[in-house]
Length: 356
Image (tube, rainbow, N blue to C red):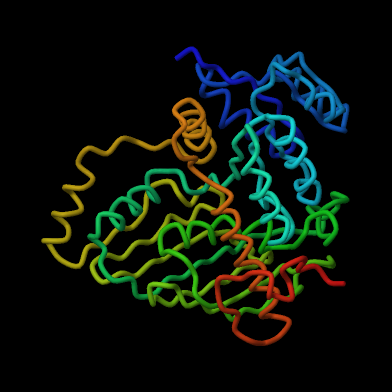
């Protein structure tokens, strides 16, 4: 394959993981040509580590580079909206870390900008990739699992005061939210990826673990469009960290592994109701090809979409669904009422869920 896309990575915190997991495993698809970061020490450390000579502190300089095909935005969340719009306006393809933006109004504005942009925008939801979650997806899509009954999502992680010593973390203006935005958003995306859209949510948020502006604990009761019930719990105060999905269908029980940062990988527990269902599962998985986890597969599928013109592996529709859940969480917690989906301009939190 000769269609190698040149990438500029903006922000070298999580951006370093994009390089290691997403781009370096695919030298026939990507070349990281430019690094951009406001921290000179980090910029030079990452550049030296991977032998990347192109380095700048100026995002506008990157926008003007005709040789760059993809701008990968890995900056703090509060900067995403403006950087995405500028990158799309420059004609580049765009990758952007979660959360994509800070309100439903902003994501709707981004989706409007996409309609006239030459480039394509892919939000990051790397936890969708791995053998476990993809096997579950294939079984469900094949109709083998049957009627969905209930699901639970647990994101129980630990973040201490040391974590929040980074100036932009824990603040509404720069992190845009707490555990819902930067931690449990992954597992919540996996929940809807496998169980379908949400119809209604009653949720609560609280700040109980750290002395920060944003929430670090959350729980909710959900009604899915297909009639299933789901519960969500999330905290940053768990001394033992897990990410766990448990999905009960008519014919199959699925439970993810408990690895905090790679719940999509095997082993998953997949329990068929009987021998007939087990045989159907064996048949649908007989030609299984291993799915590398996280960024490695998402970036490969992104390149496939750019070259073929086919669908993106993750879209702004997916990102909107994730932010719709967040919006409903904050609105429900404030009003003590159930929020029905879809969530649109009628919501008091549509333009911003942040406190006035």
